[in-house]
Length: 160
Image 1 (cartoon, rainbow, N blue to C red):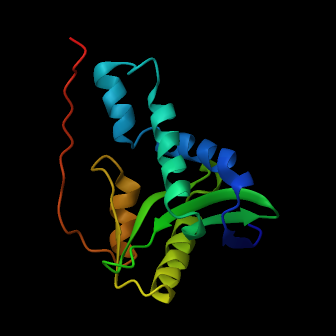
Image 2: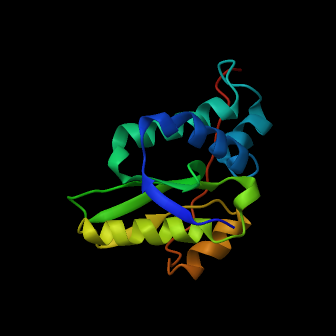
Image 3: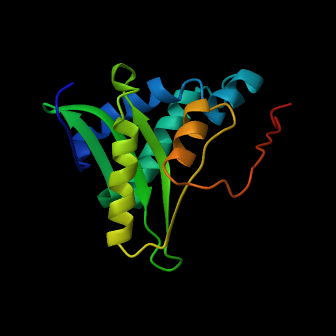
């Protein structure tokens, strides 16, 4: 595999990282779980809602989003957010293109954000994953994250 470089997000990356997101999160997002239970909401599918999560990340802290690329081709990304008041950094989204999974790209992105958050003065870094995300449940402890709690998502259909 060619050399992977990690750089800061640019607005021209948005469509590509959304595409990677939709491909990567299809089996592991609560947005898809909601759709499986309730069908389309407001005539929008889970992809629309999950893509909005990326818009939210860009709006919140674009300087803390990093892109992994090979020879100028985006192959993955990680979004993060800094909170200077709490000194806790968060990682809302991390995804790698299907053809590059299993090559340590996710680990590289996590390492990059770890170093970045330390430089930014954060004292804790947190990430969440769903129970159905076996990759996250294996990767995050391997990268030094410790489980703090489990959360259950409930939804109620208000249309009927």
